[in-house]
Image 1: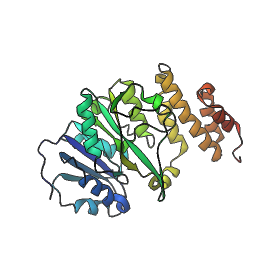
Image 2: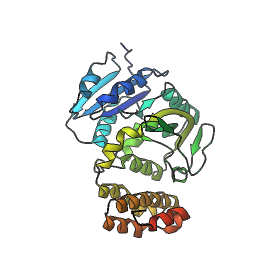
Image 3: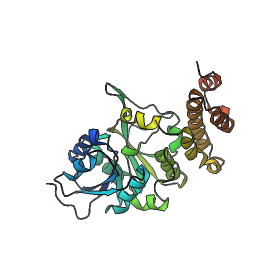
Image 4: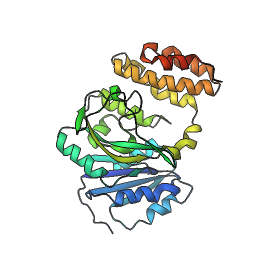
Length: 296
């Protein structure tokens, strides 16, 4: 049984929906942390498998498990943050894995950068059971713990931060009203956009401490209506007028959505997104691909 932490330095929030297959491994990655001063809030978002039973059978008093009707991952995360005791919140999705130094490195970054509001470690992406990718960034981050002055400039290829790689101040999260529960996809990208636009101080640690298991989410993402992916982009149209880096960041996301729409025969969505893109924000190769027929 874990030691009860009266005033934990970090609260870990884990939303769970039908993750029975991966949940135990994710939980074990929390239990194996070298940094022990934490609590965990698991929010079971109406799972229909045995996820709730797996979580409830934990013999560790640092863990709290709450259940709700299925309302989506943003609602589950927001509820977990609301229940958290610590001012620093770390997120872990139920199918991702932290290496044992994850919380230790996050806390080291918090201590070193002092006035930081959100921090992240580096991560790897598991694209299939046998293939792990190192993310590629549009701007090379420092090899030391450092501040990130413009998040968007790093994230035109792969995002510099990922949901399960970050920790943030609860007060800042509350100030921007948490995750947008009206979005069915892109909630994590939207959160980072709002943290950046509010000029909160962002910190980066180049140590790789997260394995983001993207292959487990492929079936879920394929069922999302592409028009839902349009919402988090359109939400920030007024903001991109004030920021050329945000405009380019959103145009890259529009480009990706254009390709998906064309491949799925949704030409109305394709044309709507294409007209919003400043073509100078795309590479020559991207410009060429955008014009090609879907068969190619």
